[in-house]
Image 1 (cartoon, rainbow, N blue to C red):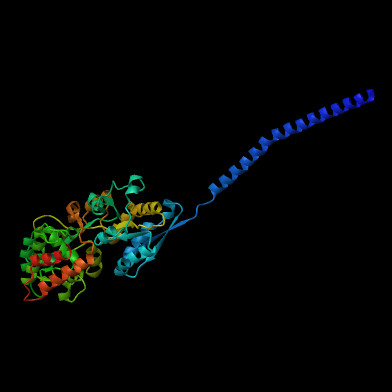
Image 2: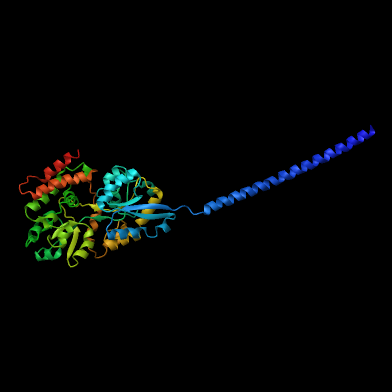
Length: 431
């Protein structure tokens, strides 16, 4: 019995010691656990840092447009070094074969989601694309500070603002102009340059002689719009076609043909009004900034002046404004907004001015330009009162109807068509 008690005592001691040992192992294990967790967290942190250091995948922004050689060079300069200004982006140019191909193809491409991310657009026929939702508003990027419009000409920003939303960042702001052959002007004994259409008509009578007409009036919507606006009219996006101002502007043109003082490019056997002017088939013509580059090459010896569009009843003309536009399904709209902000920068507008004579939309550059003895120096006041073209959404239908009736009025000797009847008939198509 005594031996049994002794054996039980020894067994209890052994059990106690085993328990203590196991407890110690558990405590050691528990103490080591946090160290293992910390190592895991450190490893996870390293992995996260590695991910952050990995370069982001480059995003390609496609810039679409049709362009002559000089315009394409301006585009190339606009995107030069863009990847430095907008990290992680690459810009590719998406070519179109012609202006018509560009505008006709764009809606189908947008529907098929194969359209470019950004394009260059003029404000002549932009209403169709805005109203049909092809252009994206850039208001959010103006609000966020990605795009700063505070230094742009107000008229250019206003022209690209439709129904309270901004749809393009203008990089040019060119008012229409009236060009005069000064050698012919002086030879006819004329002195002060015209400021009204009545003065133009008087001058045209003196200038029409020896196979030369006083004025070229191109039967084209751009040119007819200058007359309509300057008589207090305007197409009003199709709402105000049948207005007194529009009727008076068109009637002035019709009367100039009836009086034998005007010629169209078709009548001269030439392609456009600039050719008529450069070949001295007419002493005066409405036109735009593109005349400067064209005449420098086609007729470098011609002596001419460019003045604001003459006044009918008001001072008015169109503002031809190229702008960079983000399309509705752009791959990355924010990156696209950053790209167009870069493309419209001061350096790019200066290049466009020097190479193409396009007046900048940035006020600082425009003021500097007009302070010099340049060919378009007389146009500065026109920037403030220049207006949109105001064509209806269905611009092609409008121009087809307008020009069909106008051509009949000037080409048919027995035509009874008047400026008033033209606007009445065209308005019926756009009720």
